[in-house]
Length: 259
Image (cartoon, rainbow, N blue to C red; front, side):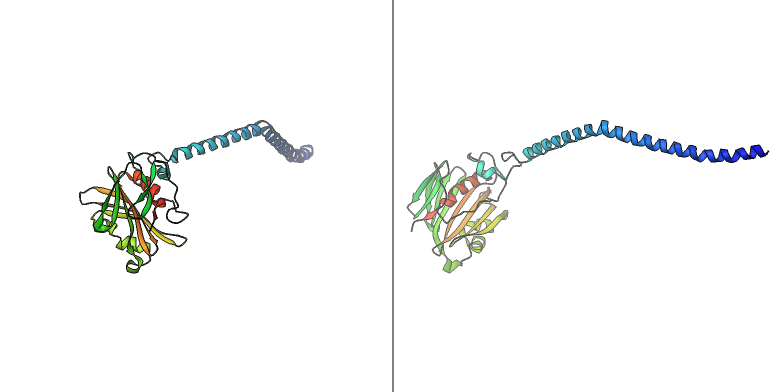
């Protein structure tokens, strides 16, 4: 019995040592596996990551291309400057995004336009082939071709009578915009004042339904020169916005009173 009893403590003492060796072996095995994983798999992950970043960059470029085509139906930002047709397709962006850097008459002559010096006392670039007529009762000079019309008023109204705020004049008092104010179907947008040196100007984009029921799209600028209001408007069909924008932007900065 004593012999058996003396052996039992020895057996109990061997259990923890065996467990410790097992744990140490497991830890070493785990470390070995980690090192092997790092050696064999990490380079492939880096390589794959580099390829993934490259593919994401290409995807971003394609996304930019698909969403930024200025000639597409959604690409309104560049339609105005890039359209060179006569209005067969209409854009929708009503904000010109273009501000004159100098006063009246500072604009460059665009392609497809010719400089016109008018007997009414002003100079302006006109689209080639447009016809001229006058409306003496309203002191307007009109140029037109097809469904498009440009109206020029050379200093008819004075600031002494209508005030020196071109934006208020454009919105409330300009006779050429009376159809907008009286129409049951109308809208106004991109209304802004522009001050260049001593010249105060206002611009706006309008739509209205005229007396014949036609819906029109209109770009307007009113400018004060020598205490008098000078006006340039371009009017066209509502679905021909790009052409109206092109005609207006090609002409308006070239307008210059001569007297």
